[in-house]
Image 1 (tube, each protein chain N blue to C red):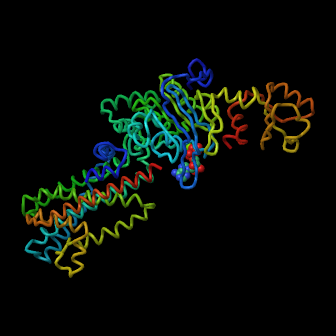
Image 2: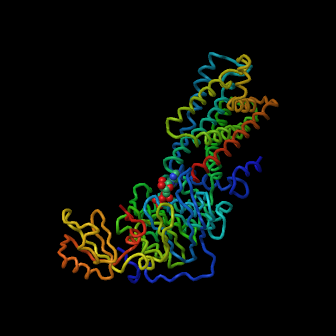
Image 3: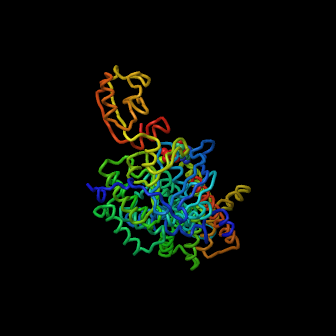
Length: 264
Length: 328
Ligand SMILES: Nc1ncnc2c1ncn2[C@@H]1O[C@H](COP(=O)(O)OP(=O)(O)O)[C@@H](O)[C@H]1O
Ligand SMILES: [Mg+2]
């Protein structure tokens, strides 16, 4: 897979995008000064967990033999991973691409478009991992994790972030105006509401159920829920492969598009 | 205000670079098309080590397009290009590692401070933090921005931003520095400071390729230059050689009151100069002796409201070659 990726990103030697680490460093430097912006990203899933998990949970009782808060917590973690990565890879990328023109100077150095893609995606992941760790700690404290496998939800949510950042950066290369970002919500809101987040996928009739099972956030939620509740089934292999491929395809599209946009 | 060392002008005393070393840049029939539009139309030139080489031309001539191709951030659409002996299409990253680039737009990182801009740029070239910090401080001194090291970039003046961009382009100690309109939009003082820095770099052995639409800049900085117009090279040589070839020694510039301005074929102008150019605001008479020509005009009853005798310049060369002025 990496070899085929390398063919998509000519002009780089070794692992494509490996110099993205330099751009990652730059982003860390920028956020050293505005770490508050980092902290706030944690509160949205927290409030959802308190509101839905416990508020709604008191009404709903159990789902599939699980307390409601236990059922929704991994789903909220997956959604937060997706949204966080999307935020970084859409708004932030767009600002740097079209307004700050950050990459014009970067591309005059040995870095190439593949490095910009990998650097920005890696940054979104690092940021996401901070939230994932905090969320797992919270689940452990509240007794919402039923298995030590819950620790694997941290790499699991990074995988979700990777897929979201890959798709997000690729989509952003086609955006021309801020208004275009309204489209992002058109996709993410239904994903959030209908990906077996708040009720099990068995509630859907066929063929809707199959369609839902093919969406990325569903795969992410399925993965994290299997881990945090300690009920892994073979389908989590599908989850992992699906999300990984989505992220890799997104990144290779991004680096080609960035090359087209910036190296004219 | 800093004056150039010893009052000598780097453009003077051009010695042709007779060297056996391979050219730093070699272009043959180089072209750049954007869709059906041709921005660079089959130009050929070479830049020798140690040389300061210029592209002089008006806006839209294709200077930036050429510079971006040399900088390996824009693929040529025709012809052959070698930079530092390598092929930009294949070795882009390796070439860029050895180049210094000062693009037309500063493109500084607004989310970083002045010093951070240099440190992180050094990191893009794989310098260690220790090395990158040391060079950042050294370069901030060189471009006289040490006192602004911790400041945001946005509030800096245009001249300061330009100097910071030059410092950034030097972070990797390049052998070849590309400068796209280094002083456009700067006030004279900022511009002289920049010229001084560039002159020092040249003395330190850094080769320069620069574009400009200021003829005085080309004369000051360039050993050799090409004049570009409408995507093509229309002349090539040292500033002195170009002036000797395409202009006379002196120019008599005269302004007339609007109702008293003689036409180009006015008999009173006949034979006064080797060549006469009537511009909307003034009339240029190309001659070996401007004073004598002024006396002749007076004898023939012409009474300009203003008279100026000056040495001819690249501006005159450009006017001669293209029929237009450089900056209008
Ligand atoms: N990316 C681009 N797409 C389309 N046209 C371009 C692009 N870049 C430059 N041009 C056109 O090419 C011509 C030469 O531009 P440029 O190389 O910037 O000239 P100069 O630097 O001499 O002012 C101009 O007419 C400009 O509009
Ligand atoms: Mg230009």
